[in-house]
Amino acid sequence: MSTKAYIPQLYGRSKGHSLRANHQRLMAELLPRVATPDPADGPIDLAALFPEANDFALEVGFGGGEHLAFQAARAPATGFIGAEPFLNGVAKLLQHIEKEGLSNVRIHHGDARPLMEALPQGRFSRIFVLHPDPWPKKRHYKRRMISPWFFKEAARLLKSGGTLRVASDIPDYVRWTLMHAQGAPDFEWTAARAADWKERPADWPETRYEAKAVREGRPPCYLEFRRV
Ligand SMILES: C[S@@+](CC[C@H](N)C(=O)[O-])C[C@H]1O[C@@H](n2cnc3c(N)ncnc32)[C@H](O)[C@@H]1O
Image (cartoon, rainbow, N blue to C red; front, side, top):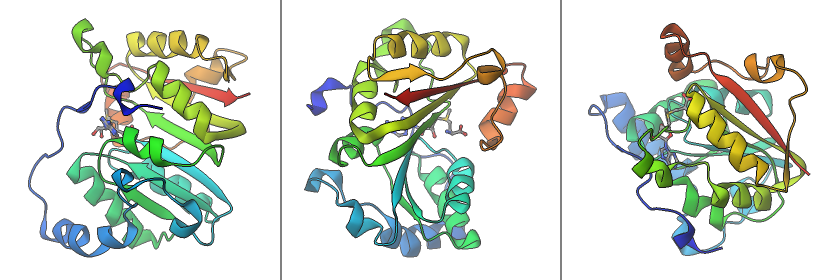
C-alpha cells in the first residue's frame, strides 16, 4: 500500500512544555530500549521485538499512555505497540513502563501510519484509536486519522475476529467513523443496543482527555468493529 494514500503531518503539534528532568532521563535511557525499529528501514519483525509474546495489539495516538499501560498490564503475554508523535506523551508512557515494570510495550515516537505499513499482516488482535484529533474544519478532513486508508490498513493488520476500537467525543467524528466503517467490507460494528456505544466497556479505562470531555459536557461514543 502506498504511503501516498495519506497526508503527511497529520498531527498539529509534536512538542508541548519542555520535559522535566525525569522525563528527559527516560527519553535518553529508556526510549532507546523500547523503541520500535524505524519503519523507513523496512518490515518490522514482531518476534524480534517481542520474543515472549503470543499476541499483539496496537494503539494509535496513545496521548499520555494511560490506556495503553492499563491494557498492557492486564495482558502480559501480548506485545503492545504504541505510536505517538507528541514528545510529552511518549515521556509519560515511558514513566508508566518504568513504574509498572511493563516489559511488553514498544513505542514508535512518530506518525502511526508509516509504522502500520511496516507491520506484518494478520497478527494483531486489537487496534485502538481513542479520541483521534478531530480536525473540525472541512478543508482539514483529509488529515483525519480515520479514513478509507485507515480501515484498509487496520483490516490488513488484524486477525480474523480481531477488533478495532475507536472513541470520540465529537459527534461529527463519530458519524464520520461510522460512515467510513460502512464503506469497509472487512469490518462489522459490534453494537447491538445503544448502551454498547454509549457506555464505556469495563476493560477501557478513562483517560485524562476523556475525563475532560465528560466534564465539559461531551459524552464520548465507544465504537468497536470486528474484523470479519
Ligand atoms: C485528542 S488526543 C487523544 C489522546 C489519547 N488517545 C486519549 O484518548 O487520551 C489525540 C492524540 O493523537 C495523536 N496523533 C495525532 N496524529 C497522529 C498520528 N499521525 N499518529 C499517531 N498519533 C497521532 C496526538 O498527538 C494526540 O496525542
